[in-house]
Length: 353
Image (tube, rainbow, N blue to C red; front, top):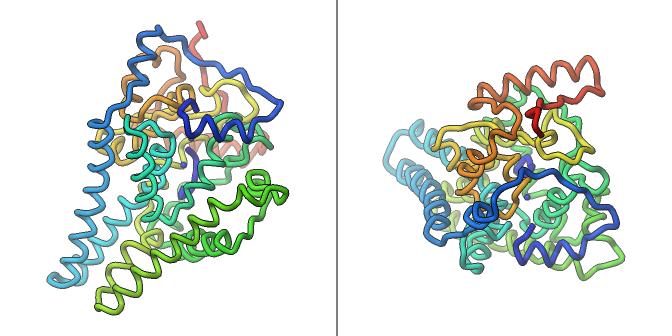
């Protein structure tokens, strides 16, 4: 998943859609060999573990949002600002929730994946229909343009960007969330990638993203109307406008996935990046720090990726430790790319690969 809001198939819903976008080109991806019993165990889905991940994340949103609402009525303004900002930090990871649930791998029961995917997509102003259409191709053709245009290298990115967009960024809402939703709701698709996913020659395929965009607009408009009518204007600041503030941690986590690496290769170890995080941050990030593993075995539930990593780490490039370690690596790569625009980092692979 590689989205700035970011943001990725062997599961039934994705497999069916993949047939619609199948091309004549095929990439023979390298995957670490695992015993069949290990593969079966890693792919096992659990409603209990899926519930812990999903409801636990929802509880973080509810607790931080509830604290902000309570503070709005009872505590000093600076406590309210801090609580709102904390909610924004958690809500920035809604795209990761939509991503995992869209894979259909979080819950064993299929409708639970669909239900919570809709819940989180609504809260995050995420058009999950459009995201899934893009993300299926991103997995199938990772960093092979023009088949994959979800991520296009090189990415021009420096750490100072986190200061620019990670603390207060109104454009994230007015341009990316509200603006895009209004455009899709009006049936206007633009750009090479959107036209590839939703060609003008097939108007029926556009109905789902248009319908979802209109549903989001109607739902958020209702929230705003009721909140303003009751004097609870703190509610839409949380539920409708959280993209404006607090995304710095998401920025540092999510922008690690492919930046500085190689395109047009057939090895996920060269075009995706894995790094370690603390258990708390892994939970918040829906385990997407294990990004090589996720691309190698996209149908493995997120809560099994840590075990998968331990099983195949002998076959992986060196794994940066934490956000500081991974951004030291990325910063060095980006500095080299400012000198040589054609430079791409070739991750060192084990000799027996």
